[in-house]
Length: 355
Image (cartoon, rainbow, N blue to C red):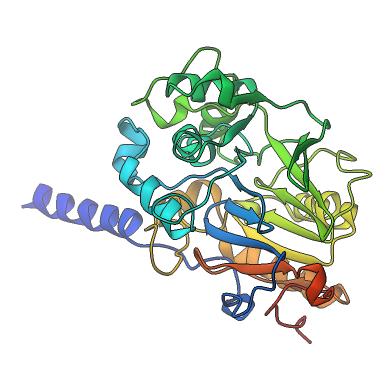
């Protein structure tokens, strides 16, 4: 009876840790709605979750990461994973790409080569005709999936690439440093994928590769995507941006000094007055419906939402003119209105800074 009671207790603990989620580390008041009106020629964004972002100016569309597959804890930590074709098809369709009447992508650009950024990107490229742009490790993910070499391009840090009116520069940076030594060793040591990676494979077989910040210049505006909460001191000097898509996953587990330095080396260094947090929702959450925070078991390793949220609120309070907004799932939001609509100082529907 004692063993049975212990088994029930352990089962209840496991159900709590893996079946429930922590609150997302963002303020619901920061949420913006889809843009009701999209003036012609506007630069828009759609957000799927994690750091999958779709940008378009009406002529050219390109995507960061393109990750749509989702897996449960058991499969992630003990099993093998592979891209989910049905999830990718649905995700592209919900973003207005692929399917009947859907457009094509010029490029899909993973910020690094972990599974939650690069795993689905080769299939996204196959379905949309996009160039897969990234590190040699990302290229080997593409090769392992059978993506033609004509659609694979190795990025050179700080050398701009042009897609339509977008000038996109990948700047080598650092990944978030996991506080748990075992997780840090698995996720960050021996970072290169040295041969074509053929799934299904273990999640940690999607090694880091080279992590990048993505800087974008466009006639309508400038912005930066920092997908992971890491930085190189002085690494973004000279890369101005009006807006930063700021990766905040796990930021609360770091020291107060780390958080301050991260903010200084991304938001302050670029001169941005607008921040859109990314990589704050659960890697195991649903791909439809409301965003949820990390599964409690995962949050023990790499997240502390309360500290992250308090830090962002602190920055709002102490930085005059700063705006923070969170995006809806899949819906189009105007970042910079088209020239004919008149230039705006802030994205459509972004609320004013908190008093």
